[in-house]
Amino acid sequence: MRSTIRRLIIAATLVNGLLASGSINRNVVDMPAWREVGPLGWAAFSRRADLGWRAMIVYPSEAFAGMILSVAAAALFWRDRTAPRAAAVPMYAAALLTISGLLFTINAAQIMLSVRHLGDDPIALRRAFDGFEFWGWWRGVCQCSAYLASFWAHIERRHGRETSNWSVSSMVWIHAGVSCGKTRRPAPEASWKMHRASRRRVGQAEWLAENLVNAGRQQHR
Image (cartoon, rainbow, N blue to C red; front, side):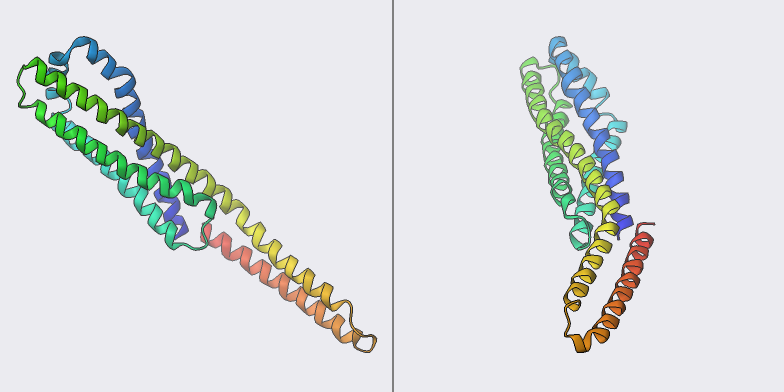
């Protein structure tokens, strides 16, 4: 399960990164330029670009892919009780942000679809432009935040994976040390029996620590 979660996080980070870069380019570069050109030029371009058959395939596919990957990764992470808890906040945040971004995308898409039937009415096109820009900004905020959350989750999970083996073995050794410490204050007549028992506990702890570390390495492969 951990390898599946890792692949989903990486894929979600890549897709959310594409969405974030597209939103930054549209909101920071394209929309201010189209505001200077005017709604008629924006509508003419949008009818050939955003309303073309290529955009109708690429844009929804990217939006739904980012949401599905992020939600699937969060669901599997929730089921994996051994996953590092430090990655929980960014993992769930990425899922919620992609869902919110998709909802804002739907609002912006409805306005864009109406441009097809507005003709060359400058007032109606100006209203459509303002609405599309408004929802586009909120969509961009969610998509950029989802990318950052996905990247953060990947870093936290990678860090937790590297330290998990050391933490497990350390806990075993601490437990063995406490047990040995308790058995080093026996009564004089039973000292040799307690000494043998403490050595047996240390041997069991070494065997358990080695098996846990090997099992953790096999899961991460």
